[in-house]
Amino acid sequence: MNIKNLWVLFLFGIMAFSCQQQSQSEQDTQSESQEAIFEKGEKITNDNFTGTAWLNNLIYADSVNQNSVGCVTFEPGARTRWHIHPAGQIILALDGVGYYQEKGSPKVIVKKGEVVKCPADIPHWHGASADTEFVQVAITGRENGETVWLEEVTDEEYYQ
Image (cartoon, rainbow, N blue to C red; front, side):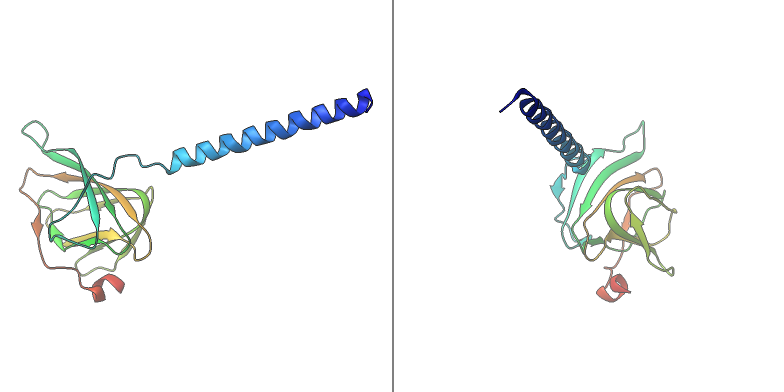
């Protein structure tokens, strides 16, 4: 093999290695972006949810700040019961596709990056879509009282 052929093989090898490194770097970036922002937390075992969901309490309300903040992960099909927040609630969608519905209004599809403002004293429910996990951060005011839990969301209501 002559020097010219060796030089071409050397350059080709460097380019192939460089492309592999870029590809690995892109893969690392993608896997980092798919990692959860907050840990899943504890599985919710009360009857205020249908299906499987987890809660990571990030901030508990206290006398200094009367807002609680929690990250909830809903498996596909999981949802809350109808409920009311006397001081309202804000939902930040972190991942997946979810649903939100106020009593008497159509169901709204909520996607990653969207925000929902739940008015005070309005019955509503929220959770994952039927086929996609949904991760949300819920910021709930406590100054006017605790969440009031109502009836379950029926399958008919959920799927309409």
